[in-house]
Length: 87
Image 1 (cartoon, rainbow, N blue to C red):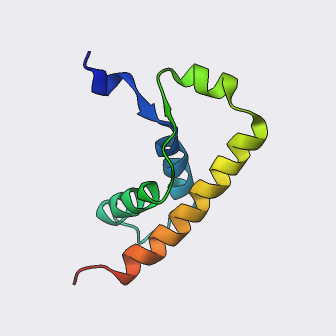
Image 2: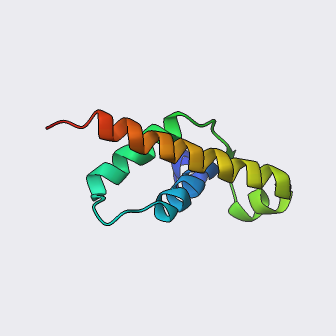
Image 3: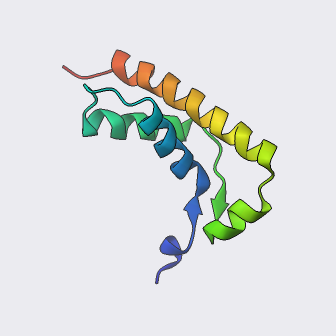
């Protein structure tokens, strides 16, 4: 196992959840991938090694705030990607 595979960014999971919550029928895989990239670039990173540790040590209010930030970032990213699509 490489060091790269040993850690993850917790916001990736939250952004995927926010994308799924706001998914529209017309969304393409390319569009959603761009939305994910833009949203993640607008959020801080929160690395963890084991997901159980992250869930155990993360306070409920902090998790709620992270979810809200993720949803807001996804909504902003959707608008940004729509406005900057190549034709």
